[in-house]
Image 1 (cartoon, helix red, strand yellow):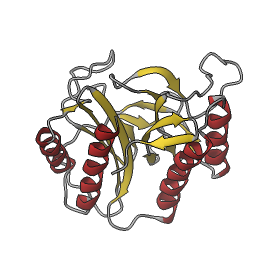
Image 2 (image 1 turned 120 degrees about the horizontal axis):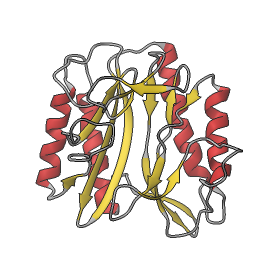
Image 3 (image 1 turned 60 degrees about the vertical axis):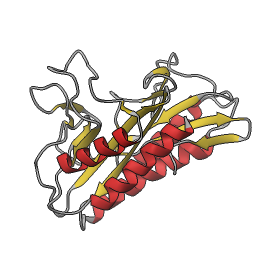
Image 4 (image 1 turned 135 degrees about the vertical axis):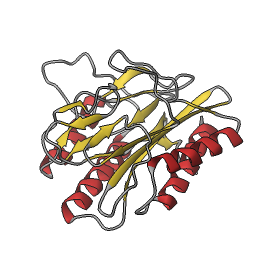
Length: 246
């Protein structure tokens, strides 16, 4: 899984180098497709189907611009100064999966948007720092939620992290919030677990809707910007090992 994760990290690093005004998300996807093919890997997202979607996901990357939270389809739209784009990449290499995401600035962004990105990235780093065996996930999720809400932002409820291994989505579900009324999603961390931890944070309210008739892009209901950061991490006897690093 470390090899798959390292490939994802290299792809996202290359995409970050491209993040400037005038570039399209289709350009970004083309680079990712080439790197995945050259490595002998498969793009995890291409061909994924959901009940809401009118067709299987058509690309290697999810590229979600501004108010799009997740599942943005790469397009010929040119990114503009002040935009943000969340780039989510997943691959399968030698039978094992890696999954990571980062939200990139296009040129200079507003102070509020920069703060949104910083808080969301910090939420991921906070979670990773708390992961260790015999910890209940609700303790980690509660800290993520408290960190985000103290900053005046909202945690997305409809989409959560997940276990990952030979398949992209495995048990358990890994929420970024706690619901005192429903403890069924809680679980105890144990050595050997591998999780995709991925805070999704809205500048405004937490509610999301589908952005168009395709059933793919998920957008903030109030049109506010959203940020998304993700790492694939392994729980170890000593704490945590981030697998989606070069």
